[in-house]
Length: 297
Image 1 (cartoon, helix red, strand yellow):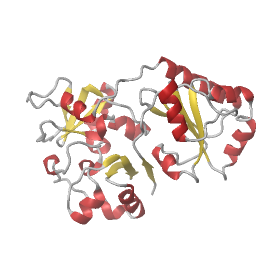
Image 2 (cartoon, one colour):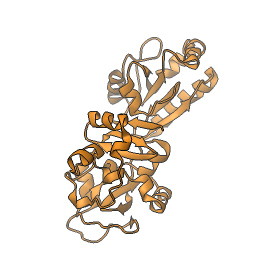
Image 3 (cartoon, one colour):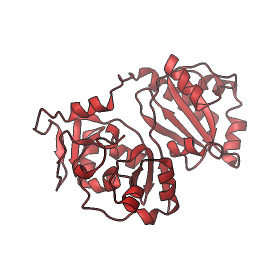
Image 4 (cartoon, helix red, strand yellow):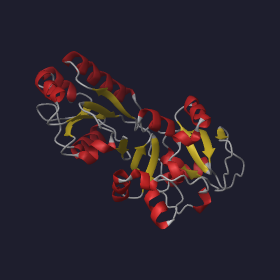
């Protein structure tokens, strides 16, 4: 039985000055660079025991052209998953080598898994940098403001473009915003943190979800229980042990049996990871208006 663990990805914008070999020294340094200069963050996940990783080190990263591309429109870092498991879990790096890019608009994509030749890797770097240059950086939106814009308490009518899943009981006004406005379908199917559009939404069991496209909303409405966080996004450890419905955070999440669970702390996520079956009871009677918290954080 396999579980994939992740945390909320913080979007950054960026271009770049880097070390002589093309790599910056840390994730923090990469974020600083893109915040100041623009571009995208590229993370190459590897491990000391990984033979394909060693081949890329010898055959690809030693090349001067690759080193220049690593710092041309990108803030690039290498991360050994055995040394920084928390960062690896953020980006779903359960296998290596793996290349993940964080684009200026907040989109996170896994662009490669496995060994890649020098020519292919150069194309990957150049295409990622080109996409980042053409991508507008969105104006930051406060979570509370986003919630109010989606569900205005002065307007009791359902917003244009909002659909409801079968049997939905929207009892919160304004409704809870699921997954901080990120698209649940992209997250489930592609492990991709893609912001949803405020005009493309659907309500399920009192929680409103935003979607990256109409196709994503259609997929959600066909099987909302597959895509929506389990237990309405409440921490299953607290729900099981204390019988309290407390909103989990998208910073601490886990996929178990292809279902998403959210937690209030990393410690609770670790408890779940150790004994997931202890915390996965079906709680269909849980209601959104009984949750402690106003939005998924």
